Length: 131
Image (tube, rainbow, N blue to C red; front, side):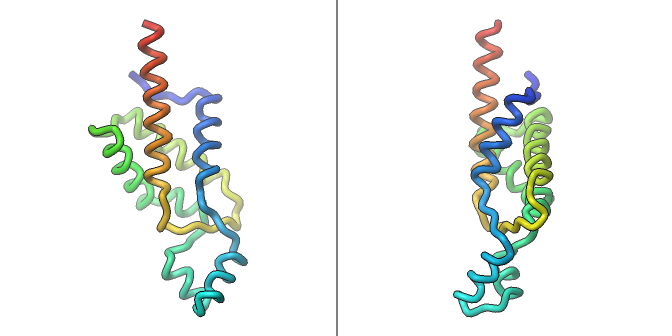
């Protein structure tokens, strides 16, 4: 079975995924650092903060999401499932404002794995009902 996202499914999945992202402005990060008695650089370094598009497009996050998806599925992730994961991460990265920041220390892998597994389950039901 292929797991190609229709435009409607893709938009819905992307919306659910991006709503769950924890992004901040530079001002918010600076305020948190100030409250913590740190310099902005210390806060950014400690929380591993980068531009949201950079975090979402990183190999590190891709690998973490792939591992989380394999755990949720209980088996190795297929090429079609990997393609869906890559599409969602790349689309979410492209949709981020250029000044949005986020940390690598977040629940993106678990969140995306849960959403993708639910979508894969719905696809399996559709295929079964169509047969």
